[in-house]
Image (cartoon, rainbow, N blue to C red; front, side, top):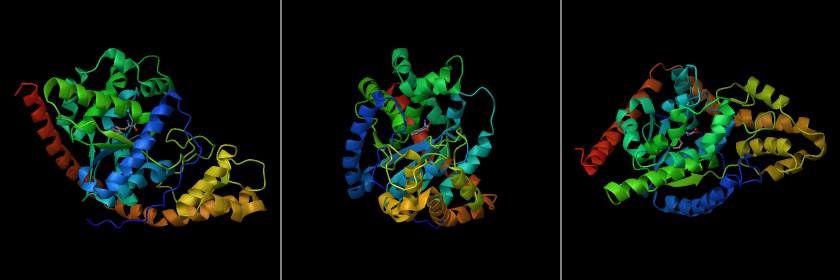
Length: 372
Ligand code: TRP
């Protein structure tokens, strides 16, 4: 199967927008950004020294926030020659949900989104948790390395509990950061591109690696680095961060009409003159950002061009830019979706590779723990 690669959007310098996370994470995030700049240089010079693992929960099709943020970055790393593994984190879907959902359908849509965006299954490993038993088994020794107090301190887990509206924390919600450590360490990944909400999980991963190494085998696991994306946060049509659950998203799989409708309905403000001021005018800035990401131009330049012609004109420009930029990706997606085997083949190949790595790691771990 050959995949034609769409052009990846040009990187845009970080804007002042934040995703509204607690300031306790901001310091860690700043450190990660600094370290990320250094790592970017290393990755470009020595791609063969890095193994990337990242992924997401299959809770719905990917939207433009994912596409311009995380997915474009993965495609870029793949093109640099870094080995990339992507976990479709199906066991994490049940951390904060009490009813069954169509996980299988969501996995299918995400894999189509990946392939259409330019992730090449010949080079990038795409797999589900539930297809890699040895990965899941690593959670048992890893759980023995952390305390309940450490699990209790994770701000992202607390935020997810609050957002879920559930009355109490499930055992899996409390411990899934350790499961995530297994996702990362089973393949000895040393680089984990994530958003800053995931940094506490990365700290947990580093803690697990460090303690395992101290107790059972010096140097066995790497302590992986997080790589924060330089792409600014894409907002949804209501001015809040674009999210699968927020009903404010434009999905990658949407068609041109749905995209035009969503942009037309997007919130703006009452000022006629268009300017790029992410802090003061986040909604207008977001339209400029989407246009910039789609065209490789700067948001400031686009703002100057629209000038006094107002938000209506800007929306037209944004729609045209998005629709044109996404057309090849969407055409490719439709082609892939019409092939009944492509998703299953991608996941089977990914599972075979992930299982080989996970089986070897579990065998090492059991040997180091004197179990085998
Ligand atoms: N927890 C991540 C999320 O909710 C998804 C995820 C699972 C992940 N395993 C991972 C991300 C490993 C990075 C590395 O988005």
